[in-house]
Length: 248
Ligand SMILES: Nc1ncnc2c1ncn2[C@@H]1O[C@H](COP(=O)(O)OP(=O)(O)OP(=O)(O)O)[C@@H](O)[C@H]1O
Ligand SMILES: [Mg+2]
Image (tube, rainbow, N blue to C red; front, side):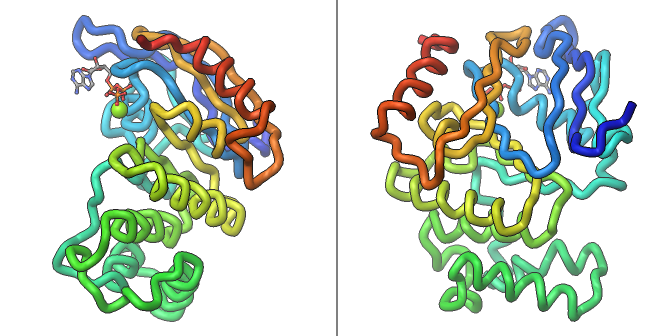
């Protein structure tokens, strides 16, 4: 009974590292084109979940399926944006954006088209011939995000990509990721410690428990965008999620 609307199916996912029980029989679906945020206490297994999707680790029990097939990085294109800026310092902005596409051996026309599109979307025209060290942290992170979207991945995984940034940069980049998500229709899984960020971005927020992690609750968020972080509705959802986590 394969459902065409499902991008990722997580079935009875369980992970142990030796005797350390991290994920405990977790099951949920992610819809095609969905923007899902995952929040949970430090060390509960959020990054482990992403590493299981990309097969850096294998599940102890259960499995993850993408488009109905077991997740396979050779078959499914998955882009990951980490917390640390990870552009290649010896390449210009434009070459950083081209890099993954050239590795994939896409036709030159297609590479040009995608790179120009992302440069335009992200407003990177003036930086295209600069090297990453010549850019601010936020511009460098924009390139990472742009590179991830340029791959047109089945799935975009973001692991606290804005963790180090101040609030102004975060707001700016959050709007940017929403814009790119809308523009491309990519399925996005965004992990964050920041509950306000999750409520600002997500269509749905998954709240995990302490490890061994289970899903504590899922919260649907259908507030209009751009969201007003000071509105009573926004604050009510944010407070509710905070209550569920209690990580202090
Ligand atoms: N390769 C590994 N070997 C052994 N233990 C590991 C390994 N990777 C992660 N762990 C442990 O698994 C648990 C979950 O780690 P993980 O990095 O997934 O947590 P997290 O939810 O991403 O935490 P944070 O919020 O700090 O990013 C932690 O206790 C961590 O020490
Ligand atoms: Mg983590």
